[in-house]
Length: 118
Image (cartoon, rainbow, N blue to C red; front, top):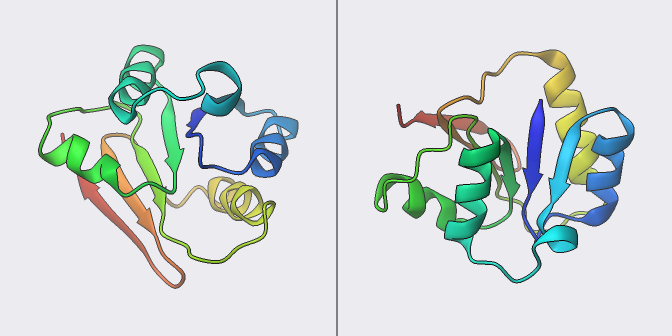
């Protein structure tokens, strides 16, 4: 699985996923300060799943027409420690219960919802 961690995704969590062997690019390291549209384009070009805490990605998909093939995972969490998103996603990916391709996946404190856009 190839991942693209938005600038607001904690670096500690990026490192957790990287250590597990995930191919992950961190926007804060390589492309700091780029727009959400540019992040989307990287995800499309490189076939990566976006990891973000930014709700604007739903608008980019459903109103602006961006359609990243590998999907967007939006974590809708308010309070968390820097390692928690990485640990949570590690467990979620290992379970293999979800397909993220062509979907906006919204993960809130108690639920996971998916909306297809293909």
